[in-house]
Image 1 (tube, rainbow, N blue to C red):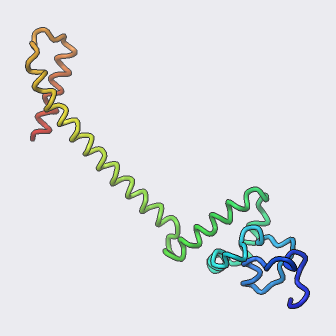
Image 2: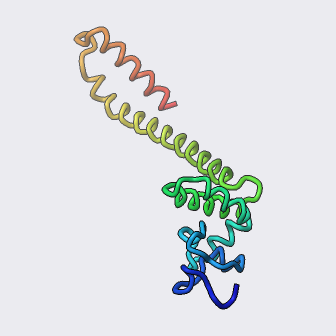
Image 3: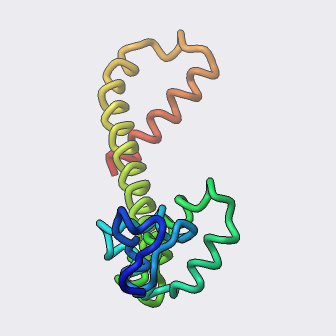
Length: 154
């Protein structure tokens, strides 16, 4: 371990994984591209939640072009698990879904209020027109409009 170094680490420090696990970092190190020595916390948290062996197996089973995304997901999930050991990122997703639902209700209420204000504004114009000159489908629409306005006023 000490002394000779490896082919890749003789000119650069070992990756965060090899440094934490006190291993020699080789050119074949599956962790080196994704866990740089400048960010040791990133690997430490993934190691604590998933274990180095499991992460190594996952990365080796994936095509090289998918590994960076997998590491990003593992880091995100590990951080979420540290904040919420039971639900992890599912807890965060549920919280965000609740926020979306609440905002959708607020939006629907705001749209209904806008519609009520528009109908109150339009009501003065609608009553000034002659009801006899209005065609039948338009009369129905006017009647619905008036009913909605009464509901808004209630």
